[in-house]
Length: 275
Ligand SMILES: NC(=O)c1ccc[n+]([C@@H]2O[C@H](COP(=O)([O-])OP(=O)(O)OC[C@H]3O[C@@H](n4cnc5c(N)ncnc54)[C@H](OP(=O)(O)O)[C@@H]3O)[C@@H](O)[C@H]2O)c1
Image (cartoon, rainbow, N blue to C red; front, side, top):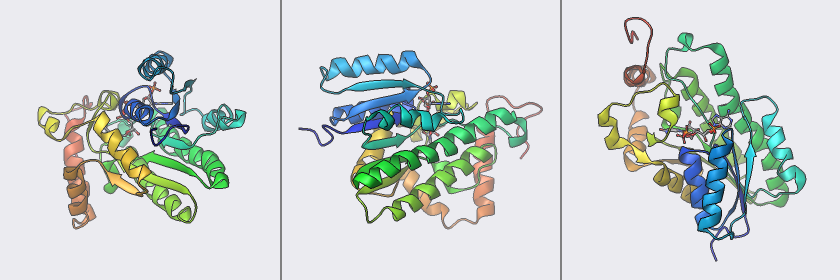
């Protein structure tokens, strides 16, 4: 019997990338799944695939939802725990970003990103966290980024939001330390997903050397969560870089991040990066 047999995991952003890989990995470990995102076709195709692969030993339920819409987190809760579907593992993975100067990005896009990356994640942690605390059992994995470790020009609100996720998760983990609920923050480095295309980023070929597969990243996150770690950075190189960053003055790390992120912007109006 697998470790997670009989448990149910809710994965947000399960229609692609790290979330999809998390769902596959959780199914391989025996967990039933609730898959949430906006693209119904992707979610249903994944559900069918998992159902076939595990010959119906894993139950998969799909919820089509836009988590950037106000009130969506509550609706997701009402459609799961609210109708008696116990969620043992919450994977707060859904997230987007947009690489450009802050003042060039339409406000609506930034507002939706903050609602999704921070508000929905926090409200889901609150709603499902209360049920888990009552049962004295459960796991929450919040997906942040290595962008959480320094101010990040050209990705200003995204990185600041991920710093929020990191600090929030560490604090929640400490608050729940004497209960049976474990909270972990996963900080991925560059990972091979659709994220970059949607984020207006063009990764130069050299980045391939430090790019991790979504599958490996998901495994690292789940292993850390299930072993009770509070925080994990994906990969040794990323971990080393984030460790060294502690000794770099903020002004310098901001300039470094800005130098890199400014060169990843796919289309910048005007003559090009100016920062
Ligand atoms: N890839 C990287 O290099 C990298 C690095 C650091 C951190 N991360 C973080 O990893 C997480 C997963 O991203 P990814 O790399 O796997 O990118 P991805 O392939 O683009 O996946 C993003 C997921 O979020 C979902 N999503 C986006 N907007 C949503 C909304 N409004 N409501 C509900 N779901 C929504 C998408 O599904 P729908 O479009 O179907 O809704 C998709 O399933 C994000 O939090 C991201 O910030 C990624």
